[in-house]
Structures are given as C-alpha cells and as structure tokens.
Amino acid sequence: MDKLRKPFQGTWNIIRFNWHFYALAVALVVVVLLIAGNLNAPLRLASFFLIFLIIVATLISLGVSCYIYDFSELYKLTWLDKLRFNDGEKIININAGFDETSRLLKEKFQNSSLSVFDFYDPEKHTEVS
Image (cartoon, rainbow, N blue to C red):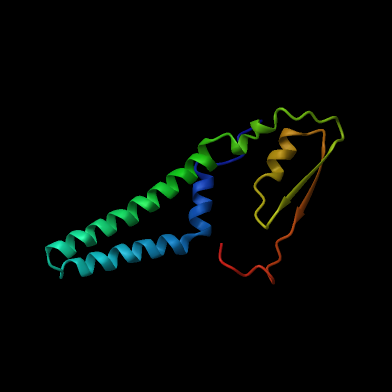
C-alpha cells in the first residue's frame, strides 16, 4: 500500500482543529511572563512554575497525539489484517465530517465495496472541535 498520509499529518490536524487551545496557552504564557516581572521572588517563582506546567502539558498532549496519529499503526490499518474479506464484501465507514480513513480502507480492501456515511451537519454541529 502506498504511503497515503504526509509526515505529522495527524499532529497538524490536531493543531489545526484545536488552534484556539494552543493560542490560549501561548497568550497565557505571555501574560504570566509580563506579570511575573513585577512580582516578588516567591510569586515570580510560582509564575515560572505555572508557565512550566502550561508548556509541559501542551507538549505532552502533542507528543501523545503525535505518537498515536503519526507513529502508531493506526492509519496503516494493520490492526484490520486479521479480518478476511471476500471479493465484493461490503464495508461501511461512518464519520463525522472529517474522513481520513475511507481512502485507506479502499486501498487496503480493493476488492470490497465501500459505503461512506457522514453524519456531520454544519447547521446542527456548530461547536468548536
């Protein structure tokens, strides 16, 4: 099977869909840094610890996402290798508006019939990612 995903595509998608969380983290770090310069030593130290926690939590989250979406076997679909499909077998893929797997399934199971159902409705699903 050809390589169908770009390097770090999963991590980039996480950042793209949740950009507001990362923007908030950066803004919070900047605000705390600006305030920390005017604080006494113990509060300044606590401010730097808070900045450290924000950065570490963000990096751990991105690291885990990178491992799962970019370095694991998730999108290679090797976990489906135990399933045996006959030619013409029907496969159903259900998604919520962002389909990264139908193309992969079609490539992996070329002799099967793939039906894709997307239940995303932009009128009803207006919440942020």
